[in-house]
Length: 335
Ligand code: UFG
Image (tube, rainbow, N blue to C red; front, side, top):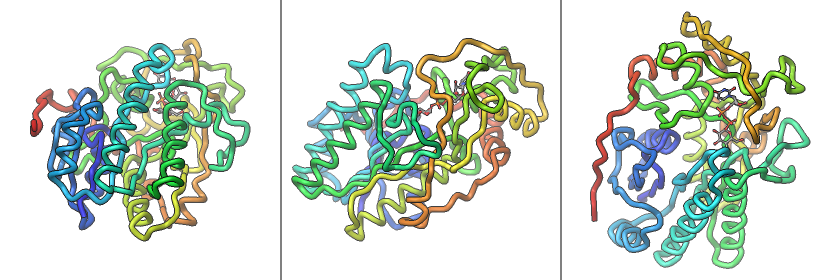
């Protein structure tokens, strides 16, 4: 069976492709390379294609015998979505709907969807369970929640099977495979901490030190990107067994504060990492920790990376051996 990965050149997508290489599935990747890197795609047939381009999408689906789609292509920054919601609704919803239409036209009825903890907004219960109310606080979170609802409607009406994975804080790298995290601009905590350790940046800003948490800084649930990626394979297998559509959190069940992450990174790198208190970043919930009991019970998902320092070390190995990230070549099969 061929599996189409949209956004397969991105940070998480490239790790999903890497995990797919360990399975018998054949891989087809599409990415518009606005954020992704061609070099990060280690296998499969690659197409540079935007989901807005229905004609190209149709040609790709005609040329391949696609049995399932892993849909990651999306914009994913909370702050940017507050300033430019139109971009988020356009790319994550309108373009995402194109993909669903083409899937239906080609009778491709299985999707693994890349969702987010941002659907929960500032949750009342910690750890967050899938049955807790989703109250997204940003256009980004809303675009992902709406898409999940569209998937549920498509399941009811057309029998489209889906698994939606609500990611918490993906981090780390499969440095042995030569892939890692390279965003421009970088906004995520762990790569910024490591770039500070590498002296590529000055001081790290700690966004808010007066939250009601154990040390005043925000707490997040950090999960290794390869563990996250492996869950997509389990989700595909569930869909192949014609299981019911479902939604799963993907986190560790444990949380670390910004200060704890910086301290762990100091220990891992053995370097000084200068950090200073700064204003709160708008839209940051104080604590986000997932319960991942459901996916453990139902799909048998287990983490391989359980120790934060171990996770940071994988990211450190990648950043220190690729200080400039990926190169800039933007090639792909144009059709
Ligand atoms: N932080 C800093 N300084 C920085 C960068 C981040 O203090 O320079 C803090 C943030 O305020 C936050 C924590 O570090 O408290 C983690 O921030 P990230 O930007 O790494 O991650 P977020 O939790 O904000 O975002 C992640 C994903 C989003 C997703 C969101 C869901 O990256 O795509 O979780 O809530 F939407």
